[in-house]
Image (cartoon, rainbow, N blue to C red; front, side, top):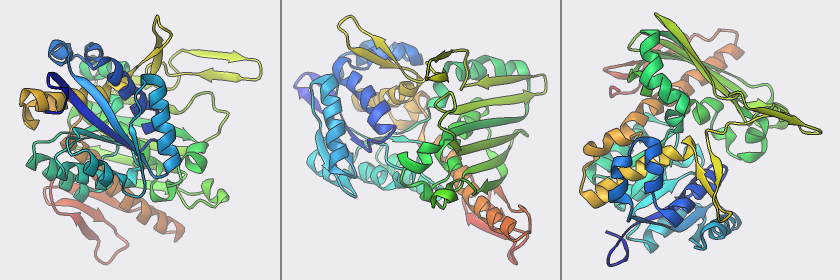
Length: 428
């Protein structure tokens, strides 16, 4: 195993992508690991039984990589300002290759690149025998998800997916308690609406994605984590009205309805055009109606609100991430945004230091196999959405759907001579 000395068990990490999420959540989470290890985080996620075993483990962020040299240096400097340790900088179109070359004993590659650029660094890391911790969605197609899963299985490697909605304390209460009270699920709605700056300035790749592919996976995974039910069909539509005014050929909003094999139907609504003067960072929530009741969960407004002169009225989600002031003036970084990184790293530690297999630790974290469900939904929804967009412009209505069955994923298009088009031939 990698060691800082002959007696210190060490996990060496590299971070690829340091934008909005990589440069904030990942970087700060790894800074706390660098300084204090992982044991102090484990009670938050119900894994404190491993605290004594993992207390001696050292974490070392050895590299940060971004597309541009400037952003890599900025991230490395930020990390050094917290920890006193400066990771090596890499930049370019495929900087992960350089990292894997320079650090043959690397343990974990964290992937926080744009959504459509996840697959290659993941597969490169797995080929080199390196565990992966990736942002959602793991990838954008079902084919790519299967390639990732097979590569990980072949070498007994972990691919943890950051599905942090699972670890929101309100969602844990729904999963472990409320869903049993409301009875068999009938229908529901989940929404996450991002600010306009995300699609117009923060990200330069919005034309390669859409708001559902970007943030919808949080909710599709959350619903799966509640019920462990697979999709059987979906339909999807999208709109292009606001972003085109700025010369951006991307969807403003996308709505996807997914029907599951337990009989429930869930509507997922996402946009990234919320005006800047909205009182919260994002607007988000979900509700589920059951045969014996209903649960409503508003993740935007949780009862915490303030206003001040020239600042307007604001709300804050203090559960996602928050600073905890230490006596020495530094700040610990905790919240459910960190928790889903923690659980995957516990699984990786169990494989590396305790000789566990992937199957033995699969219950600890959101796995690639579970992420495959979301990847399939994203894959099918994108194809249905584009066809329905085309037909809506032609005045034919949004009549295209997708079916998930034992023969794979089939697009059903009444406007096509073929009608039934199987886009992937393996069952979920």
